[in-house]
Image (cartoon, rainbow, N blue to C red; front, top):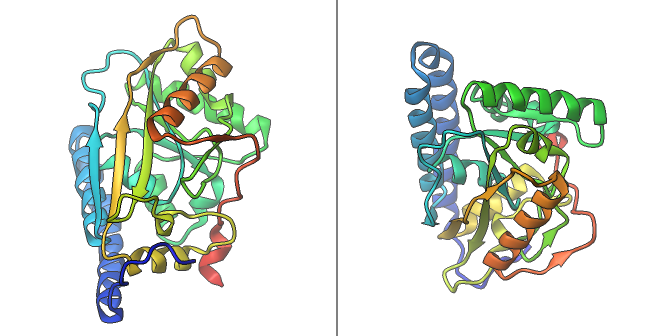
Length: 272
């Protein structure tokens, strides 16, 4: 896939950056395994933010934050974002800590899945109502501990040129707990300000191919837009899904497609 007309990063530089990514992953795993059990939640959150920001820096992903991340939230908080890339979680975590709900396949990714689980990600098997109910119970428990939740209601990634329909099922805990819902718009741009599809992770693209496309980019601009919050009181989960979808679409000036999103690549990709 040709993402842009920019001159790609030289091959030796790509190899160097790839090696740094591997070292960064192992350093994170060591910290989580050996140090996290001794730290308070606040210090763990700060470490996750630093690690995420460092990952973006190694990949030369330059984040730009607009709007204010939630601060001092006394009610349950749910972050709702569009989904473009496996970079999305690191992008959010670099500025705000929340427990993400991710597809179950991510749990089986080598090292990355283990790191995600140990840092609080909740994994859901798409299309299984009983499993969704268990995830909703876990979300309620997280709210009781004062933790925020982050979801991708599209259910899979896109190229960033449109939104697909937001599913409402994971927003039921926000309704039950009278939460504050924070729409967050994400996009990745090239140096000319156009959508940079090299950052996307869709369809049959493998994890290795996705990383390769990102490493070829000299710079990726990542925009993170925190939009005005929505009070869940008095709203149904479908109303919340429609409202967050409309606000994110407007902020990104993107059309909303009625089609099902492309299936995101799964763990088998790493073994191809």
